[in-house]
Length: 119
Length: 108
Image (tube, rainbow over all chains, first blue to last red; front, side):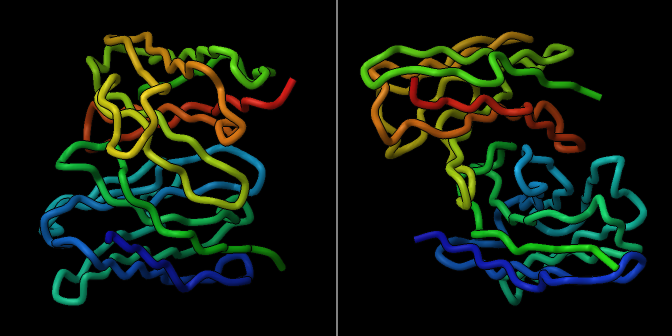
């Protein structure tokens, strides 16, 4: 069974940094594109970033490019999101998600980790 | 950038109804569209991929259609478990995915 477990969220002040992690199990992690998707409380979903199977390609939504860095360690079946210069508008639940069979739909999701940016 | 819109934003329906949600893309995305169901406090669940492919384990009352810029999700014979929010997502390029704003299906 596919399992994705995020961690690393919490309450941080504006301008601070945070590193989110997602540990995968139940599938061959190194063969899948992975994404981070966030959801502001009470609102819709926003794709944040994705990363190719071997980490050689990464892409970001415009609003986070330059502040967020997606990475992976296939030896540890782990996905990461380094978030710098946090802003109030980054407050959200962050989900990691697996891309389905090499396409961009996401068939497996973690439970999410909440990041709250507030002074 | 590709923008996605959904209509309606809220849909009130009764058990047994057939409901249709529309998703439109601002440019041609071929059939690179997925539909998700999300319930409060839970992660999204994939229902449909490549516009009309039914994800394994999803009931056959869910169906998707469309290509290019206009897509629909149809739920036949709405069940109590189907009251949720539905999102479309385009993935025409790995460099930019976009979700629609969502359609909440609630009880009439």
